[in-house]
Image (cartoon, rainbow, N blue to C red; front, side, top):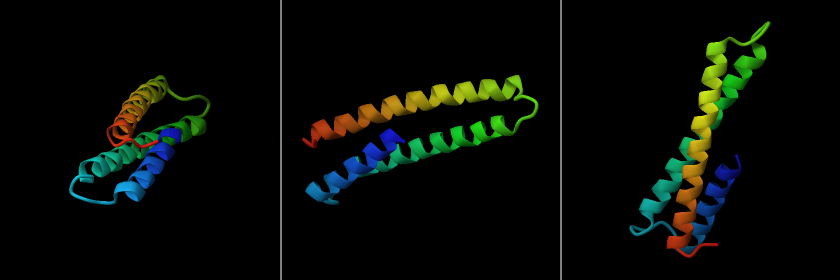
Length: 95
């Protein structure tokens, strides 16, 4: 959620300073893609956590393994997203 918030804030600042032009479209599309990947990852994790919480008497090993894999994938998405945001900020001198 933290990186999703940073993505949205970066997009807002970017639009305020540069607007939507032919030159800025690639970065705006990249920020939209980042937001979508983050939302998808978050929603998948939320659904799995809900499934684990509702599993009685306990979640199956397969469900837990899927949860752990989802967490690892989410961490990779967050790391890649943060790097992409920082690159856009550096390229366009955003704070």
